[in-house]
Image (cartoon, rainbow, N blue to C red; front, side, top):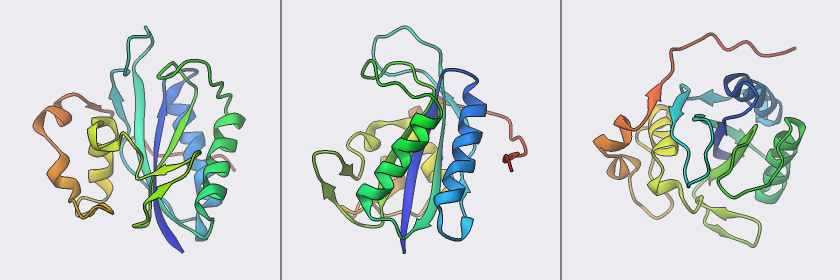
Length: 167
């Protein structure tokens, strides 16, 4: 089994609900149904497209799925929740990004792991640190070495709510 980290983001059609549904779907593909999820954070969208703020989180779980099979499963969850790929950094019902796949470095046309932009994105690093503060990245760099005060200040942590998973 491999420990994986997945970033979740949404800014359309009730984003908090979209993330809750995604967490339920991830729980179904996680081995033994065990999943750790960070708090939800509100973040400003990247790029120059006018759109609502995002709600972001990071999930961690064990899987026996190979990297591409996991990517396919994540993209299937996105599609089931109405994801349409129109504009780069555009609004979306759900975005699931495979951040880390164990300590593997993967460079394939469809998949780059560690995720190519994770080291610069507060909406990834802050929730990731919440659930795995002592994490060491495949390059040997510590997660905490990447975090800055500005990253924490750029996000708004949402009040904790009991996660209600659909049956």
